[in-house]
Image: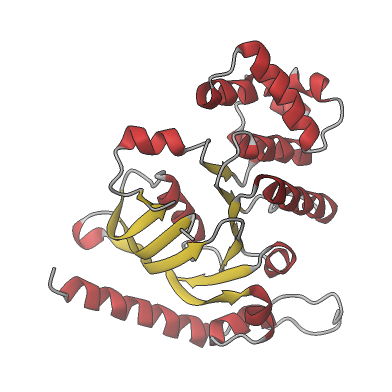
Length: 295
């Protein structure tokens, strides 16, 4: 079975010459059809940068220095830009972190969904708006016809996130990259959003790369997980195995630093600074080896 997404030895650097910095260091991972993989690590680990590399939305000063990204067997890095852009929103979709800044504040919700459908599915304006109503109903938004006429600021944060989820699954994608979509939501809405993403994933058969720093979210929704630090994969495997039998000291430290509802009196244990220092030292050593390796 061909993997939906295959990342092999991916190196991404920002800047030029002596001022450049590596943000991804030889990252490799695969997603099978229908798989939900959690991509976890603290801020700055390279989680969102990996998602941007897959989407072809790296910052202007970032380059893919080495490695390969394949989508359904096709090389995204070597793919002509028009062909790659045609996949975005249709075959590869994004659920962004901040719905308020991701939706256009001066356009009504219905128009924003409709333009996506008209562009990718060649629907008429009337058919696109009718389909938009169905999509909003699919993500459990009440009175979807009324909501189509509203502007983003007239919706709650949870409703805005539901709109973005509806747009992500609108064209029946094979791959959805969810970039911390529950970070700005309260616990109750967060649970509803996770249940919604899982229900839509099952209905559409999509693979999901779920970017998050929350191990609780990973435990709820992800079958497999990858642990990143300083742009390197430190551990990966079945979620249940990684969370119950972590092999890498960093993974064990992350678990120890996570508050437990069943142990409210237990003191929090931050990740030891000595461990972080050793991980960064190893990352910089690998950078030097890569820089001096023959091309």
